[in-house]
Amino acid sequence: GESVGLHLPTLSVQEGDNSIINCAYSNSASDYFIWYKQESGKGPQFIIDIRSNMDKRQGQRVTVLLNKTVKHLSLQIAATQPGDSAVYFCAEILNDYKLSFGAGTTVTVRA
Amino acid sequence: DAGVIQSPRHEVTEMGQEVTLRCKPISGHNSLFWYRQTMMRGLELLIYFNNNVPIDDSGMPEDRFSAKMPNASFSTLKIQPSEPRDSAVYFCASTLSWGARDEKLFFGSGTQLSVL
Image (cartoon, rainbow over all chains, first blue to last red; front, side):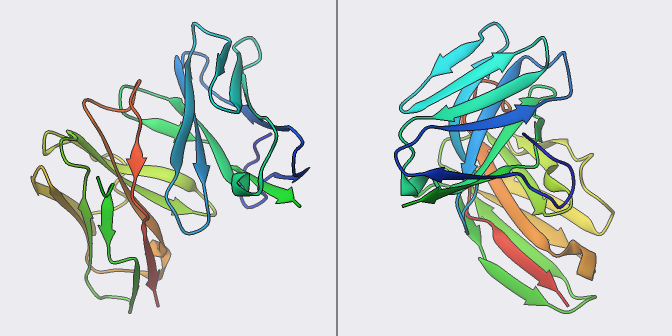
């Protein structure tokens, strides 16, 4: 899940296993959500997005699930690879241009 | 395309000095964002431009911060005078058309600013 302040959640995953990263969002009126991946020394990179009229969306090796009842997002990564090691952020849209980013989850892939 | 280009990658300066961060968005993109990232506050939107016009600067922390976009291919973020609490990674991002809804934000690699 997400946390506040300095203590970022971490997830250690064995290479080849599936990863699940969780995120709680705050605004029940948000209708658009995005997952970003940030590798060390780089800017965030778009992974996948989902609108609130959907509860699941799939990409290449990634699936985002949206549960509006409990205001929860998750990102599933299939067959996790070393290149998946990064910080993952969920973001909810507050208006047409303003995103609110979560604190991030650090994913470490063990060889 | 080379993506969003930011310079410098690293900036170390002394308190009180002026700092100018630069950004070249992806060619053809109409929206430009400046974000700041710190451990304490995460990613925060500082200012948003659309078609070179500042639309929302409510995230700019103080009058010491200013941003300009003189043309579609260049933007600056200036801090004058800089303070140690401004130390952070500053990101520029751009999107193809209006805003962030249903748009991919393309981020630059950021400028790591350290104010001593």
